[in-house]
Length: 290
Image (cartoon, rainbow, N blue to C red):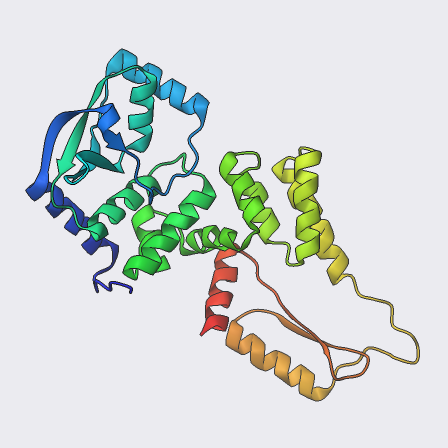
């Protein structure tokens, strides 16, 4: 069940910091006694990046201790924060590592600290970031607005990152691996038709498209959809007074241009909503969700 805190992400952070102040003890721990956390938001650790960090640790030492929770029954320690530092220290050949040990860390504080630390990192890929956002929202009732304020991002940026979780699983894994960039991913999510999106994804991989090439392809698809079909003389394209009035009402409600395109039979058609920025898109979608 969702554990509603009532005070948003600031209350979560304060709770973690208070927990650390009361229960955290700094000590050295054997690396082999530490196990990764299965709920770690970061799923992919790149070898090159780990090697660079290992080299830095060898030269300058560990600048920030990891955080672990003691598992008394198994006589081991579970990572709460710092898995990348732990992995790099092992790669550097160290036997032990500085760690803040918590004897009494509840699951909520443990999960929150791990998620928040990863959200603050610049090199976290967009899918792992989206999963971290989603977990904070689902587990603790954090809103998109609170996440945006804490991370120093716009609400539309948080919303668009979360939209990446609508992509197929294999596409998400490709983004996590770094084979395609976040810009490619955002372009894919802008393609509404699933088959067209799949085709664009395959072309990104086989033809090694740049983000600009991907965006040009998506705009080409959008133009093809918007291009009006030639109407036959026997079926001229007209709008009824009711359709024109409904356009005005919807535009007043949504604050943007709305087009109603009746089909030949008059019983079907299309409603087109226009948006002019990511913030505008987020505003309209929030209205539609109410």
